[in-house]
Length: 459
Image (cartoon, rainbow, N blue to C red; front, side, top):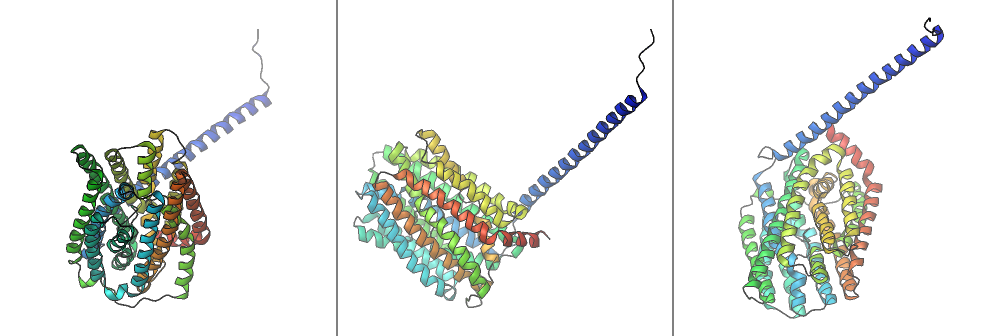
């Protein structure tokens, strides 16, 4: 039998299809290799930027910058303990939840007055003197607070001592230091310096949370009354004030500003948009302060202080490392884009923290919120600094601090009301929603500006 003959036209068509398939396979293979090469190059470039961020030495920053960063580390080492136990201490003294919220709110009103004054006279006082005054007030407040039980005297000590209710540090003296860091840092290294400034601050908070939690458990096991245990934390806060005083005394005259503050029309436009967006974020901050959140977990789930301290310590360490990596992320995608991405992630955790009825799941979401809460901090500080000239930064940072204080006042008082109505969980949901509003406004106002700024730095 003769083999079946295949028509020539069909053979040509089969060969054509085979050739076409082979060509497409080669093209897709080359495209995959090209994309993989681009991905590898991108990963290597990002790793290289992290390496550059870690290579932080005297070539990119002065000794005064390192001292200013050390000041914040010491300050947050003290703040971490008071933040952790403040609501618990006031509750142990017999104050109602609404009274606790009111005291926190009025404390921030007092801080608001100090911020107004420092916005106008901070540069004239000088960085060194301002830091030393802040350190002395820390000592005074930390020594007075444990021995008072009257609402109004506690309020006076809280305002004078600059006691913090949140790990993100609402401090009227903070604007002076931020302005000095921005002034003393080179523009291309400013994001890296603020990353270290944020990271070491969070490290101080995390270490303080760990030490406070386990110290409270040890003192309780030894039979020390709870109120006395909490009082010792304020004494430790005063001690940190003395350490800060010694560090502030080492600042040189190079840290002092040389020009009086002023605002240009362009800077005014930049500031009102920024202030409007950040007002929503700062109200959110007051609604979800660490003091309230630790109190929430203690009240709702009876989580021991030692366990809470260890958990927040671990989350704080992870957060500090992620914050250091945010600087190269900003160089890769842009500062505004980094702010929006990080805030969106954190707002999701806030929306969910009070939803689960399971203690372990709620605690896991709470810790994830701590891990992601400050990822945008370095990018935000560098972005604000880049939008202003040297002579304007102290006033601008003061304005931001005032907006922050007012927003936090509203948020703290609202949380106290929610807690008093047994609607504690609602505060966290409102906080997450406000954070999303902040993201929308930042994107609407500054997305294109961030892209242009990123293109300039990339070139």
